[in-house]
Length: 294
Image (tube, rainbow, N blue to C red; front, side, top):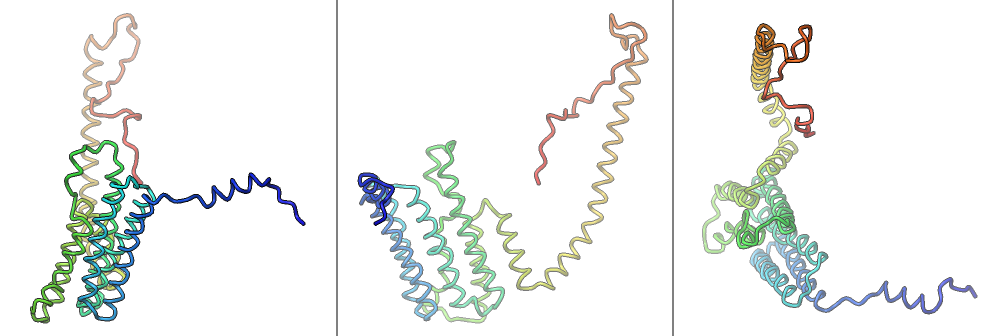
């Protein structure tokens, strides 16, 4: 028989810490979030099976649960960092990935790579929107009234709004050939509305998506643009040299004028002391220079 290194009391303490009971007030909102995540994943399956009506119903159901879980957590005083992170991950699947795949399977696939790019950009924009929302909540300097306003379209609203072309089809609008291109532009427009304060990230994602889908076209256009901008860089460099030469000439002239006059000799320094060159007022000291951003 092998003796345990722990006493019976210590073993009970370890079991208690390992299997600590989870309060019901914390468990309930997380269960609601998981139900919403199940609805979003089920919407993807229903779209793959071409049951779009039920897929859209699952997205709407997930949006309703997303509006409930936070209120239940605050009502039960069961808010937690774990619940907040779980809610963000569920929102990304429910309102970023699922609507993008539904639109692609519905009609964007007719545009092939271009349709996939629109779905990809929408999902990425949803992720950026949720990340910005989490950062803004944790900002200690954020004023209290700012909580009453949205910065960009919320992810659930974006998911419901971006599915408008499918709603129109269910209302009897014919599926003409131009419907897919219009849905492509509409999807990109809603995606940009969600991240109206982060356009640079979206442009980077769009560039790499285009590069993967249309490599030779993007490389050709990018090379031509780079060659066109080379003269602009040379002109900017010549302008910087001109400004530097003008500033040096102004400093030299200022030092020469100071040495010629009687005021060049400071009292008590003697006749042989050399005049001290003056530094231009707009020249920052080494400690005041901005740090380089790599």
